[in-house]
Structure formats: structure tokens, C-alpha cells
Image (tube, rainbow, N blue to C red; front, side):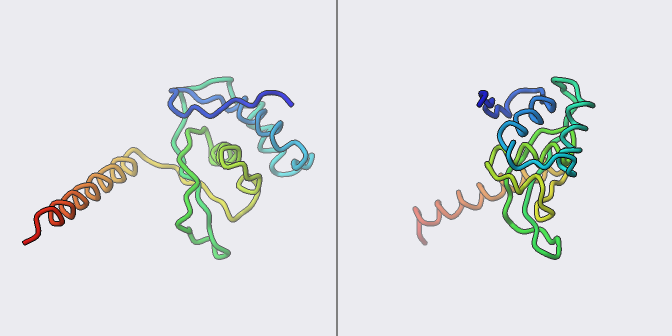
Length: 139
């Protein structure tokens, strides 16, 4: 088995072609020829440059049988498409089903979504600081 590169999401480029090839290598026994997934991988391999700075950030998560979002989030991935983000999540979590099952979805995050999430985390930190202060200095 060839070496599968480690994820380094801190770089400013993504390599969709290499991601598709790594996915094929990692899950080679599970990919059915001419399946929807095989087609999506070929699309990425044939229509992508090796490295690109033209990517978006996607959140990959699990859904229930009514396609309602569950709380389980697999991560945030730099990718060129929803399919690409699910492939990256499947490799990162080592769970083939993320790429093929309808129970896993990805959502494109906008810069406003990211800013809102950061602000929410800052608010949570402030709340924790207040609680700690109250514990240290009871009335």
C-alpha cells in the first residue's frame, strides 16, 4: 500500500485530485466500479487541478432518517465541492460511509457563518469567565 498523505488543513491550498486518489487507495475494496461514488471521484480527478487556492469551507455532519441535522459534526474541511468535503471527512474519520450514505451531508459555510461561530465562542468564553469569577468571589 502506498503512503497516504496526512491531512494538513493549515495550508492555503487544497489538492482535490490527490484527495480523490488517496480515497481510492484507502477504500479500494469498497468502491464499486461505475457507482455514483466512482463517478464523483472521476469527476474530481478529471476536472481538478492538482492544487488550488479556489476552495470553500464545508461543515460535514450526520442527519437522521428525515434528513434533519443531528448534532454530530465530523469537522470543517477545505474543499472544492460538497462531494470533495465528504471524501475528505471519510478519510479523516476513517469511515467509508460518510462518502456514500445519504445520512451524511455537508454545508457550505460563508464568511458570515464563520464570524458568527467565532463570536458565539467568544460569548461562551466570557460566560465561563463570569462563572469562574463568581466561584472565586462568592457574594
